[in-house]
Length: 182
Image 1 (cartoon, rainbow, N blue to C red):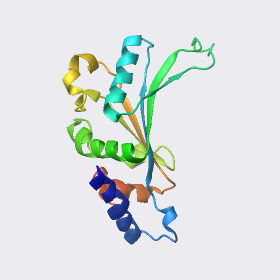
Image 2 (cartoon, rainbow, N blue to C red; image 1 turned 135 degrees about the vertical axis):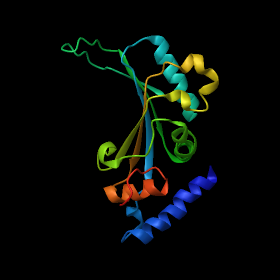
Image 3 (cartoon, rainbow, N blue to C red; image 1 turned 45 degrees about the vertical axis):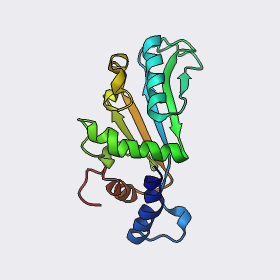
C-alpha cells in the first residue's frame, strides 16, 4: 500500500508537472476522496444488512445509512425509509481501496473495459463507476450465498479542480482510460 501511495504522490505528480504547465503545486490534480454507495430500491431489512456488511468488508470502514428525512406524498414515500448505504474514503484507506480497485476488482470484472470519461464525467471534479456484480470482489467470494443478490455498487472518484484532459491523463497513468488519445 505504501508503494502505491508513493507512486501516486511522487511519480504521477512528476509526470503531470512534465506534461502540463502549472504555476503552483497546489493546483495539481489529485484524488481527494472516494465515495461508495449502494442504493436500495426496496427497504427489505435483509438486503440492507447484507449491503452494510459488504461495504464494511470491502472498505474496512464503517458505513453510514441514508434515509428520507421528509415524507414525499407524490411518490408515496414515508419519512424514515432507508434509501442507501454509503462510505466515504479519505487518506490511507482511499489509496488502499484505489489500489484494490485498479489491480483486483476491475480486472476481474467482466463488464469493465475502461473508463469512458465523456459518459461518466458527472461534474468538473468527479467520475462515477458502476459495478453490477459485487461478488467479483475477493472479500465477498467466500460468502457467496450471503452476497449473491446485492444491488449494484456506485463508486465516485472525486478529484480537486481538474480539467477533462488532466483526468484522462491520470486515468491513463492508472491504466483505466478507454480513449487512445488525450
